[in-house]
Image 1 (spheres, rainbow, N blue to C red):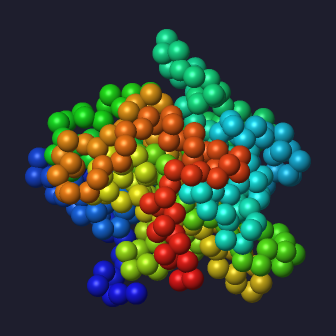
Image 2 (cartoon, rainbow, N blue to C red):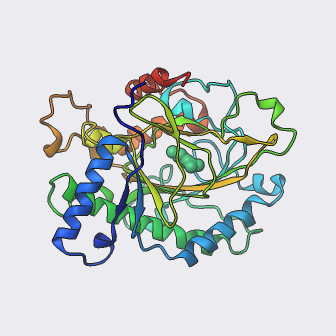
Length: 350
Ligand SMILES: O=C(O)CCC(=O)C(=O)O
Ligand SMILES: [Fe+2]
């Protein structure tokens, strides 16, 4: 361990990109984001413009669904190959998205509900149904669909605003990312971390969600201000991170690390809830994954070629995401994530 880089998640105000900020204000925000992306890979984003009324209704909708009986929730399961609907506790293992066996030999205890971009959102494009499946909506949670859809739209707007900022931060022409994201494979994973009393003993080393990097371009993370999320710092240690007041946490995914040849970091993270008085404190989160067009080819950006590192081989969004989901959802260890897996192994024990 070294104290050379004390761990800190920087705050960036993107208000100048949400509204019509001046060129100077935009340049300052882009430069601040670039610094954070190079050194941490996680950012507290403020000035995002998501109304509190939308996040409040969204949080209530999560409660409405997750408080339903397990048997009801299970009606909304889909096969592992379909990344939609309900995922019961202990059915997924995120560390397998890196090709690593879960550290406690158990599945992660989060339960989740996924929605995302569907074929019907893009009439006329003839997108593959397997990657853009239709959503399922729980009939028993009446306000769920409207409230979740409203938040999905806001999170998508924030993600697209961020890619506008990314083009500036990376010295690319305005609108550079649009042709890679006009039918982006966007998914919102809503997570609930809650174990019943009595389930604790069974699980020894409790993992809410195993260590992983996110797969796509950028993730917009809403979460309760409750401990649990841990981020791997450059010091090799895991650090607790909670969203700041009014902030959304933003982190970069593997496709951005590939595009920038790791000038920007796809940072490893996990969820390890602390146990207080013999129980875990319930925690909700929702990760909006902006993953890009299924057919987009991701290769090192022209402005990121000159740093002496060997570029990653070009890959399509579809190839990359399918290998990752086969790991986390279907238990097929991903053998194509050596660089990330090595970083987890180096940090183990810390
Ligand atoms: O629950 C969290 O804070 C993190 C969730 C997460 O990393 C994910 O869904 O990919
Ligand atoms: Fe994640």
